[in-house]
Length: 308
Ligand code: UDP
Ligand code: MG
Image 1 (tube, rainbow, N blue to C red):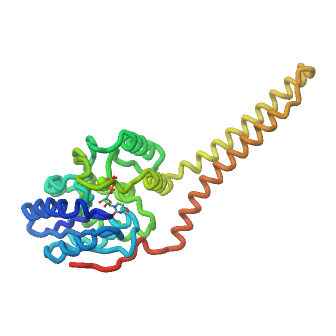
Image 2 (image 1 turned 180 degrees about the vertical axis):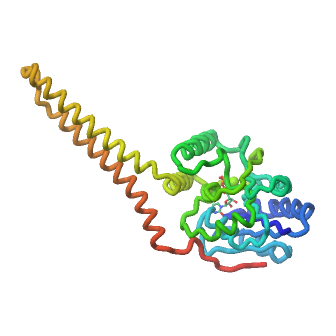
């Protein structure tokens, strides 16, 4: 039974040799039949040459080079598409997710007949307080807003079997939020707990702006609640205005002398409703932007070359 490992790599020259040897050793000593697929997501450093060397030296290794940087999720998507194994493992190149967990994941999938074994981070080292807290809040918010339930504190480090991969490969959503889609597919999914280590070397490629983009994508693709939110706020405010109008009328009837015709109230109302409208348009716009991307129907990634 073949096991495939999918590893997205973007500017990982500092870690790739070390992580390859750890990964390769783990695979070689535990499985008879395996393959490792590296996806070079348009790296600008020496990752390309390093991966080519590895792919030529080891028969079990292949590298897919993208024509430019398409992002982590497209890289994983390509890896799943090219993988031929009965089980596919998705793992980062920086050794933050321990390769030593792979045999356990495979064992669990086999013995429990699971289709997905997803890694849950019990703790995370070497990441800022800010990243940890925002990630924690985000996963909880997502669960609250989305119609699909997601396991908490889970990244893309996971095992999926052929059944899941085949369904996944048929989806042609352009901006895949992979962990969301896999939860959504269903079948038997089990957690495995681990400790997320510090990056072995190099820097994170998920700066705040990318994190925000990723978070927004997950939210917009997996929840229609922000649309409802806009409608509800709008409705609430209209009711509030009506009530205030009634109150004004009563006041005018009872104490006409106390009425001050002020410009403040008008000013506030204009600004306030302007804000509400902009908010609503913004939410609508985000969904329309995504529809636009889907309609264009461009490929998610472009392969330049396959080595090995
Ligand atoms: N990655 C990628 N394309 C990108 C950004 C990242 O293929 O545009 C890869 C990266 O090489 C690593 C994985 O995705 O293997 C996770 O990235 P990183 O470690 O930078 O993210 P973090 O662990 O800080 O969330
Ligand atoms: Mg990392």
